[in-house]
Structures are given as C-alpha cells and as structure tokens.
Image (cartoon, rainbow, N blue to C red):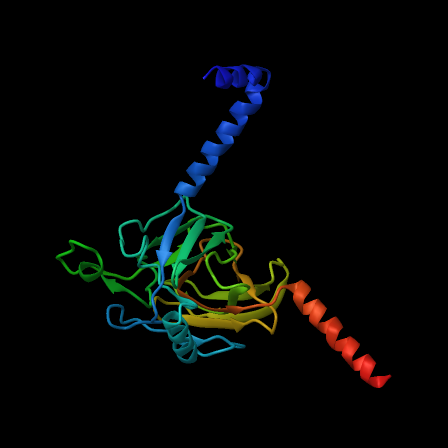
Length: 290
C-alpha cells in the first residue's frame, strides 16, 4: 500500500496528463457502446417473411444475385461468409434497430470470427416507410420468449439528408484463418418513393481509398420497383476493404437504402509473400535461361 501511495504521489505533477488519458478512455468506451453487433444468415434475398425481391442486376456485376446467393450460402455453411440482412442485431434481438448515432457495426460469423464495418456517416437500421427491404425474419421464432409473430423487414440508410457519398470500410477479420479477408461481396440498393437516382459504386481494395472498380446505374423511381443488386470479386492476391456509394443528386433528400449485404472470404497472401514468390519465380526463370 505504501509503495502504491508513493507511486501515485509521484504522478501529481502529471495529473493533467492522467486526467486526459482517463477522458480519452471514457470517450472510447462511449463510442464503442454505440456500435451494433449483427449476426449473419445464409440466405440472400429470402422470401419467406419479406416477399419483396431483387428487381434488377447492375451493369458490370461479377455475379448475378442468384449466383451470389448460391455462393454465399455455401460460404456460410463453411464458416467463411454470410448475409447481413440488418434484421438481427445482437444475434437475434430486433429491438436495437434504430442507431442514429452509430457509425460502426460488428459483424459476427462462422465460429468466433468477426470484423467491423465502419460508416463514414451516421446511419439508421429500421423499417423505412419509403423503402422495402428484401429480407426479414419471424421475431416470435428467433427471439426467446416471443409469442406473437413480428415480421421484421429492416434495411440500413444514412441518417443525414445531406451526405451524398457513403463509404463502408471493412475491417480486418478477427479469429479467422491466416490471411482471411473478404474477396467477394454484394449488396442491394433499395429504390425509393419519389426518387430517381443516378449512383456510382466504387469498390475499394487492400485498404486503399482509391477506387479499384466502378459500377454506375440509374435506380428508377418507386418503392420496391427497382431494387438493384451490385457485386464484385477481387482480383487474385487482393481483398475487398470497402465500398463507396455516391448519389448523383446535389439537393434534397436523395438517399437510397441497402439491404442484404453479403460477403465471401478466402485466404489472401500478404503483399510481402506475393513479392517474394514473384522474385523466386523470376530467379528460377533466369537460372534456367543461363
């Protein structure tokens, strides 16, 4: 005890520094408290509870929504992918659905695997009156103690009406196999009442903010009229680190929503390993020529 008191007294000259550290720690805890944890499912665009479906396939897709659904279902079974349908916060409880202050989602999948999705702006997850989600679930079945069917059909959309560039960054995977990362991803932009919208989709690779591939499309006016599916597969030895949606409008509330964000993971070699392998192969070729 005496030694501890002596140590604390020695810290007196740096009390302001200590106070600042404590404030930063509490700020960090407050921010993390805003994060919502989402479990994944294995079915893309399910129709048992939400009868609305994907209407259109975006130009330049790596896969159609049907092919992607098959791939992500297999990945879910193998513990290396899944579908974020935004109906299952905290692994099943659909009540924590409105998060206007949140920017981070913790995605859990497989056996103890997880990664963060960080939004550049605040979002809401709930039933939107101007959008119709493409997936849902029966709350009375999935939530312990539920006795009344509560069919939830949720999506995600930005809270602000003045943000026209929406970036979702995919963080590093925790608990995965060495080098595990997202290599294929897809999502559906939900068409909306009173809005016809030009959109640009930029796929981001390997942690770079620079677009590696771009898709453009026009989303037709009307709720559940032109829900459009976008997908991308990373080139060999690369991984998808995020996606950016840019809305074409400059005035008014021109946002669209997203439902069913799916992903497939695989092992991606570290850049240093790829470089060493390339150098080794080059050395072998030169040796043979000699």
